[in-house]
Image (tube, rainbow, N blue to C red):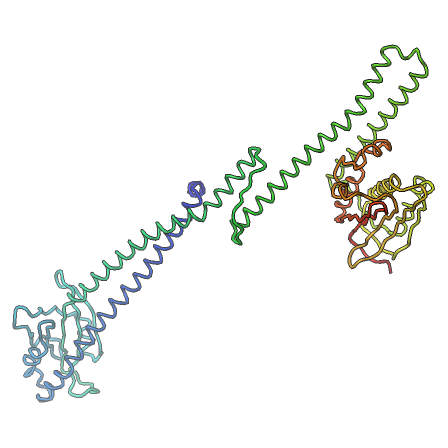
Length: 476
């Protein structure tokens, strides 16, 4: 049963549930209205019969002597009987004394209910009930007869019988109206629900169709629904954002593979050319062979360096490989200074001390970050220039800055410097053995530390790299 229900389309399930709920509500409301109306009509009929009978009974009892109910029984029953009411009179022992029906169109008396009659003879007031007589229903009202309202002596009982034909006609008409109203409301409810469901689910179907196309490889597909705050609108926006991210990731991967293949092809081509020259007999020329071997060694070194950086990027994609430790930033920066001071040459390299703080980080990866940034600064800073390293606290983060007064970064290159294999000055980068992966590795390492890196530069006047990392805690 559950499997069958779950296999139904969402629109069918919503329509079924809505129409089912509407039907139940209409049934409860209709039943409540119907039974309240029936109770009201019967109570109103009983009240009318009793109100009409009371003055007649009082007048007749005022004209007779105590204990002589038999003398007025016939007259009393005739006086209370009309075209819609029959009156029968019983004495104090429950014996029938008179039946007021004289004309054919007047209702017939209904045999009394013995238990209710005895209760009325015992003095119980307002006994009213309904009973069936053939195909008709009738309302019975029992009125105890007393000379005085509070008297304990019961002279007898008057049974008033009123057919409920008119009441039943009203109730029958009411049932038909309620049934017709329920049918009309249900039909229009089904039609309205179908229209509303289809209208509401149309954007969702569009989302599903777009996702299927994206799954089939059409990464440029977008839902492009009008922006709304409902769940479907939010889903469409999320799907578009996801599709954009997937498309960007695939494009980035494609560029990465293409760039990697290009970077690998260059040294491999050089190696292949050198080997071909060696095969043609250049080993007989020691100078040529030495030059070829040096070139091959250089290209193999480039290949090894490129492979190491590609492997580093791969390892950074697995966060579980990050080995975080609580480190003292001042001590760590001093270690950085000792490691890289030999590559800065004659340039002024100075550490400007900042506040004592601690970080949760992988020291080996952070060391690679500073090595790559400072190596980049060395390549683009004149030997007479300077490279400064400093840090400061800004609210709940620490900002570590590497500042140089080199050639800076051009406006065209600035947005791309963290892209993999991007090199603004390709001839110079290749001459220094650059692969275009150094700053990409820097950004990836900082991101896995939940930080970010910002660059400010003025071409011809240097560059500033700000590494922003979460602050663990100041040192007391």
